Structure formats: structure tokens, C-alpha cells
Length: 61
Length: 450
Image 1 (cartoon, rainbow over the protein chains, first blue to last red):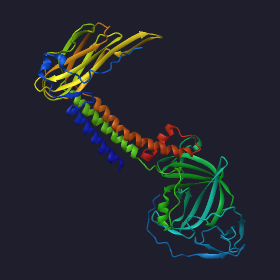
Image 2: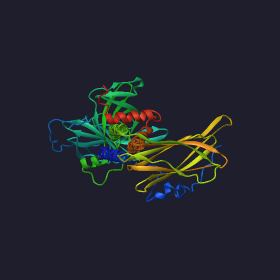
Image 3: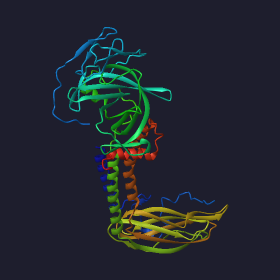
Image 4: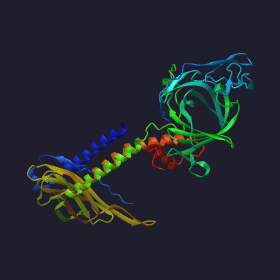
């Protein structure tokens, strides 16, 4: 019983893996923004990135 | 252990009675004259059942009377044969000043002879005498082989008869002591018993109390099994081995999928450009790139950033914007690199960075870049490269991890069970190799190791 359940589980995992690869799913943190105005091409400063308030790391020893 | 042959009905009860010469109590004989000794349940006199004068051979006093869990005279069908319980003895061993005792039930069938049932802490074994000797496989008799199975030595102890009742086909004596050694190959156990002059071997097969109760139609429930017994089969059986076999094939399938994905991915560089960012410059730092085209099919896009940094950093706000639809993928990357020499050379960070965006539809795009940096740094040279249709190994890695989790959990449970079994052995603490070896032997039945 357990081996058959594992086999089904494994096949489901492989199916998800194949789907993720085929569909190009990704774990990267990316925000989709709709309807960016065409004026951004002429005035790049008018675009407000969602990451612009990020607190920068100024590391090193 | 399975017995075959013509199924014969046990003859009607044919018992003989005699009177105990010591106390006068009636003593019943059930084994058709095969009993050598019989024990009076009234005064615990061991009598010579073969002598018409019925001599008292031994009398003993017991601190505690042990009532057999299966009453004498009970009949039950085991392995297709009807057996009658005709004798019971309690035997004890002493280990580290602790006394451990178990019960042995003598079973009789007029056609099959004698068999035994043993019980310890709710664990039962159906025991048959061996017809051929096992062969020793290692010095010190640490392993023996019998019928193409390898048995590992589990325990050696001196077993003393602490209580007897009923009839026996041998000269039974209260207090007599024999050296007993058990060799296990779950669910079977080989036991040698005797002295330097004579050794007898028997083969036991593990049974549950529930099966015993059912076979003998006993009232109530059997005593619960406590702990892990020496030849108790693992509840997981050979499941871990099967799981690992499946894991291997599933891993191969995942690997094939990954290779296929890598080979068929239309990996193509669509944009490459180098820039210089002056952190001390005034004015708007953000800019947009020239347009580039992302072809079908929809696939991930890898954005690589390389910056000439030394003990500083650059932060880049990116937006990949579709010219026609206005849809944008907004993300940011920090690239930093520090190095120096304290007690030795050290470095931290990386001058190169990459990120893969999920499937991006085909179309015309441009990139908006907004760099940020430390005001005191000055000019930073960096380059940006976009590649379309890159394969992503992350799903292969995740799939392998998810496939491993159940296999490792089941194996851990199985190893834990074997560890508890071998903790009770006098062969020393169970090492990982020993436990794994037991697992392999148990799951394979060791049938091919001949």
C-alpha cells in the first residue's frame, strides 16, 4: 500500500516538475505591473519601482 | 514452518489418569503414553510417567505459581494442525541482576508429535525442533545458516526452569539450567540449547497474540506486546527497500525530464550592453534601453549583471516593460563585493549576479534601469545581459528533495525499529552498519546468499 502511494506521489511530483518547466514557472521575486504608461520611455524617472524604498546593504567587514 | 501432508483429525480425547503418590491428586496424561515425566499440579511433584508404580522424581516449592495463559488441555489449530497444550514451563534468565522470564507451552498432536509455543511480554513464537543442523558461518558462531537464510547471534544466556506443570516427553526438572543461544532472522529465530555434551536446535516463527487467541478460542484479549522482540518482524517489512527502488526510477525520470528541458530550451542572448554609473553625478540616474524582441514560445528570461566593484556596491532597480501592452516585470538586484586582509585574505559578495524571470510572453520589450550607489564611490562600470529560454534546474532540485522526504522518513522508522531490537542484544550496541545489514537481510529474506 505504502509503495503504491509513494509511486503515485512521485508521479505527481514529476508531473508538477514537468509542468513548471514547460510553463516556465520561477521562484524569483518579481512583481508584475500592468499598464505602465508609454511616457516612461521618454521620461524613465517617472516610473516608480516597487523596490525603490529598499534599504541597501552596505556590508563588508 | 508450514506443514503439509494429509489433513488428519486428531483422535477423540483419550486421556489417562493416575494418582499422585505424594498428595493423591488426580494427574491427567494426554500424550498417549509418550510422556516421560508428569507434574502434579497439586503438590508440584515431578512423577515418572513411564513407571507403572509412578515414582516421585522431584518435589519443588515455588515462590509464585504461574498460571499458563493457555490452560492445559486447550486445543487449537496452528499451521493447519490441531494441537493440544499438554505442558507448561516458565524459564528464566538473569542479566545484570535482573530476571527475565518467559513461558513455554508444550503442544502435542498424535501424528505430528511435539511443538512449542513461547511467550515473552506478549510476543509469541511457534517453535519446531530442527531436523538438520545449521551450519556455522563465522568464527565464534556469530552467524549461522539454515535453509539458505543467515541468522545473526542475538543473545546467549543460562536459562533455568522456574516452574513446570503438565507432562513432558523428556526428563524435566525444576531448577535445571541450560545454555541457550538465539540467532535471529526475523520473523524466525534459531535457538540452540544444551550443555557441552549435547545441544538441541529449534526454529521459532513469530506470531501475534491475537492469532494465538484466535487459534485456541481463548476468552478476552491477549496480553499486549511490549517493546520490540528479537525476531519480531518490522511493521514496515520490505517497504523501505521498495520505496528506494521506486525512488531510483523516479529520480531517473526526473533526470531525463531535466536533460530534455535543457536540450530543448531555446537559449538565446537577446540583449547585452555595458554602462557606467557615476554615483556623484547629479540628475536622473534612471534610463531605458533600446527595444529588443522576445520570441515565442513563452519561456523564462535570465538577467545577468556584472559590475566592476571593489569594496563597494551597486543597487539596480529593473523593470522589463512590454512596449505594446504596458505590462512590466519589476525586480531589483544588488551587486556587492568586498575583500581585504585581516588574519588572512577574505572576500565577501560577488561581482556577478543573475536572476531568472518566470515565463515572459513574446513581444517587443525594453528595460528600465535605475542604478543606485554610495555617493562616495564614483564611477561604476557594469553590464547587463538578457537571455531568453534558459532552463531552470530549480524544479529538478525541488522534485528530488520531495521524492527523498518519504523515502528517508520510512527508512528512519525502519532503522529505529531495528535499533530498538538490537538494543536488547548482548552482541553490543547496534552500529549503523549492523542495523542497515539487518534491514537488508530482513527485506531480502537473504534468499540468494547461498
